[in-house]
Length: 236
Ligand code: HEC
Image: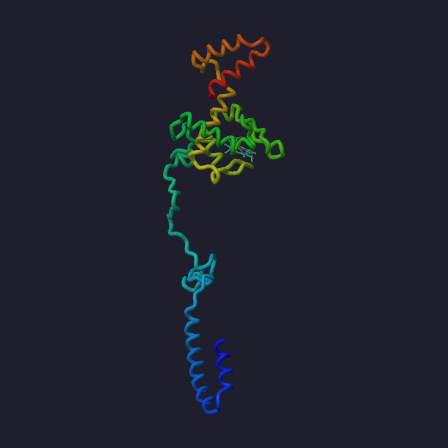
């Protein structure tokens, strides 16, 4: 823009003045060009930031990679996982633990129920018999939690399956944090008890309630009804 104005001006000047002007103009042009060149070196846009792009090559390191390996033994923030039992479900000898590494109370079981219904029931169903909606739509059917084999597994087994996956079932460690996996494992115990409780395990009050309920219902329906009230009472 500026240059064009300059050259139109030149044509309108008388000759001598024009020559003087031309000399001045070329000095100006030269200075501008040098300044432009110098300034171009300083230009730094965001698309060309002074950092390495992922996988970018560099001559700085002998292996030619700009990315460096973390120092051996580096622990990502929030991933110290020092408590082996809590994070693996296994003790120091590698044996699955039979007790939860935390206090089991009603809030934990309720949390486990909620998480189980969200993450597990789509395949295992809300009772754990392995007839969830995804299975009914063709996914491999898991075995029921109410078999002798799974009732006698240590609770760490369920934690381990959720953490590492099992056969066709993927790991749930990414979606369900360790504390919730324990809550779910505890809730699976609740489900198992709900289908396999023995009269002797009930408190005298519950046994009495069961006996009363049994008398109140018509014969034939008795067994079913007695069952439901026993478990309903426990679940509340
Ligand atoms: C997408 C469907 C699906 C979901 C969701 C799912 N599972 Fe499974 N699960 C399976 C299948 C299928 C198997 C059997 C895998 C095999 O035998 O290859 C299985 C196996 C298991 C077993 C091992 C049973 C045995 O036979 O020893 C346990 C325990 C288990 N699941 C617990 C869970 C828990 C707890 C959750 C929720 C965090 C869950 N699963 C979520 C499909 C699922």
